[in-house]
Image (cartoon, rainbow, N blue to C red; front, side, top):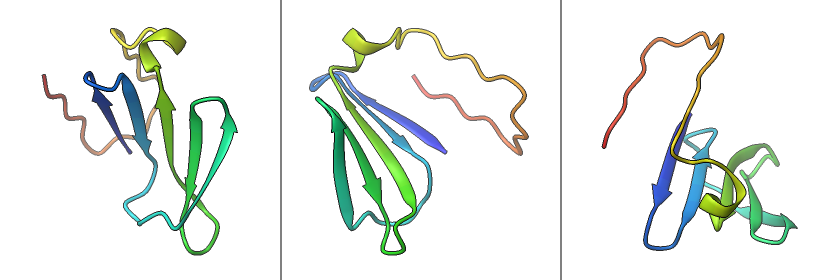
Length: 72
């Protein structure tokens, strides 16, 4: 899983899988779910992310991680 934030557009994309999306569904104003060819959820796009969540802090609890990477 990867999180990507674009400050220029204030959008947060949550990559749940490394498969391409072929379909999307806007489930709320500015929140889009992306699906692969089999209908599995592969990503979540959140517009105006800084207004919807505190994006300055990220907490990871009880995750079975093989690695954890952080970039500034």
